[in-house]
Amino acid sequence: MPDLSFRVLGVEPVRHAAAPQMVIKLQITNASPGEEIRSLMLSCQVQIDAVRRRYTGDEPERLSDLFGEPDLWSRSLRSLLWTITSVVAPPFTGSVLVDLPLPCSYDFNLQATKYFYALQGGQVPLNLLFSGTIFYVAEGGRLQVAPVPWDCEASGTLPVAVWQEMMAAYYPHSAWLRLDQDVFDRLYRYKRQQGLPTWERVLERLLAAEQQQPELYEPEPG
Image: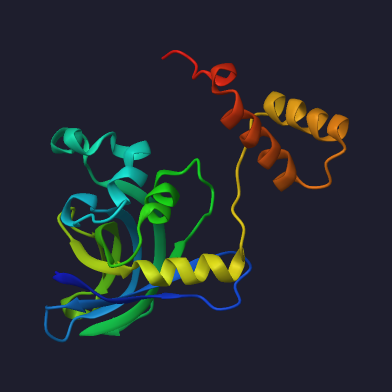
C-alpha cells in the first residue's frame, strides 16, 4: 500500500503564459520501498493561512475589507481558500517532482486578490490539502487502486514580491474592476455626457467631486 508524503520546494511564475499563472514545485515521495506508482491523479485545495503571518505598516488597514478592523482579528482573522487545482503525476518509484498549476487572477471581487494586493512584502503562508486516486503495482504485479488519504497535506510559502512582479508584467500600471451592468451603464452615460476621453478621467472627476461635497455621497445603510 503506498505511503505518500508531499513537500513544497518552491513557487514560481509561469513565463509567457496566456494568463497569470504560477506553479508549485511539489515533491511526492512514496515511503513503501520498491513499490511502483503507475499514475497519481492528484487534487489539491490551496489555502492562504493568514493567521500564520505578521502584518506591519498599513497592511492591517488595507486588510480591513477582508477581516474587519484589527481589534476584531482575534475572531475574524482566518484562512482563505485560494483555489482548487489538480495534476496527474507520471509513473515513479521512490519520489517524483511535479508542477502543480496555480492560476492567478487580478479580479478584486476575489478574496485572494484583495489579500495579496494589501501586502507590502514578506511571505504568504500556504496550506495544501490533497485528495485523489493512486494507481500502483502491488505484490504479484497486480494493478491496484487506492485513494489518497484525507490527512495528506503540506505547507509552504509564497514571496509577495513574486506575485507583485507577475501581476505587474501582465497588467503594467493598471488594475481591473468588475461592475454590475446597471452601474456600468450609468458610468458610461456620464463619460459620454461629460466628454471625458478615458475611464481614469471619469473616476478622477467623481473622486474630486466627492472630496468637495462629501455629504452628497453618504454610504448606503447596512
